[in-house]
Length: 111
Image (cartoon, rainbow, N blue to C red):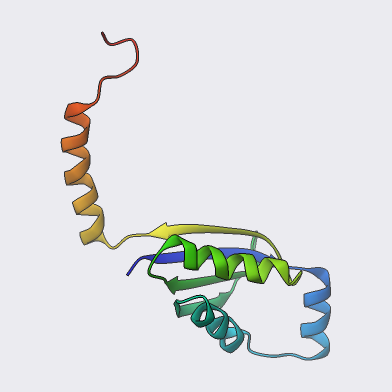
């Protein structure tokens, strides 16, 4: 199943709420991903450019998008970015397919 990694920032109000009522957000994130058809693999609070990172499995990008949009619509998170991750075995298959596709491609202006 495809893996999606999301990073984002907590809103100011979310940070205030977590200071007033500290909680482990992994359970809430797991429920969100499950409701969107996915499964939470890991959830981390991070330091630096982003405040959190979640790693989840979804059958497709639509489910991952639904989870991200639901979190963003809550107003508790901002600046969320999501990427697709591949195992090295999956990447090997992509590189093999790329070799076949590249042979059929003509670059612009190459005649």
